[in-house]
Image 1 (spheres, rainbow, N blue to C red):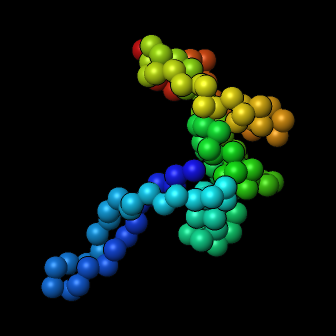
Image 2 (image 1 turned 90 degrees about the horizontal axis):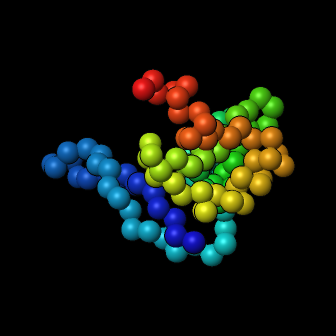
Length: 115
């Protein structure tokens, strides 16, 4: 698994304060990266999490709890955006099992974006 994240770096005072840069991806061995990052950033479980692929399953399972929102965005409309549901098959199964909210680009985009 490759973990991608942005990082902050403090520069010396002469050249300005804090800048954002794209971190070099870290190679991680089978550990759930997103829950670890969420916990390290906010110090507790998030009550809202949204994802769009199988890689987001650990984060969606970690977040929530009553009250909470776990949302899976299903990219299933190649006319509006592009279709890439093949990487979300396991997440879609988990969504049905754990009652996560599933938003379909094909089904729900008309409610969000007026044509």
